[in-house]
Image (tube, rainbow, N blue to C red):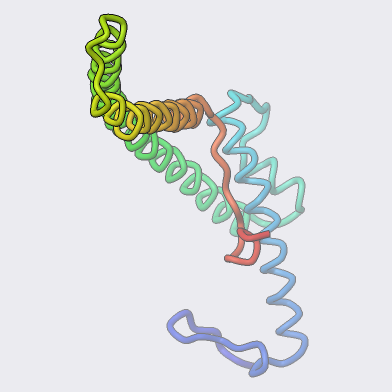
Length: 186
């Protein structure tokens, strides 16, 4: 019989086959309990769900185990929900600062656009008064019109980015992926 120690890593190939099966079953059971506990804690935190029984009793009766596994799964699930709330708050603050920066850029580009439109208006008025030279025409066509077009597209893209970030602020349901990088990618 082998003694398990938490200070050393244990490999399945070093274990006896029956001990390996027992450990795998326990890990599967614990992961199932963790998912169930997280779902319960998440529903309590975000969906305002109420249950008649405590978390421990619900999981214990559902899986038919002693207190050790359900309690550790519940504590880990509560920690996940708490870290999820903290991460959500930090992300919300980050998005708000991002929106402020975008608004500043929009104002700056709108000022530049107003100046360019005023210049174009002056050139149009000059052409109506017949004081329009070839240099004015070239300035309008080669410099002013592309600048106005570019500024309009920049403002449009910035507004789109701001709307996308505002949508992220309104979204209330965060998500969690259990497992490794393969599960996250899939």
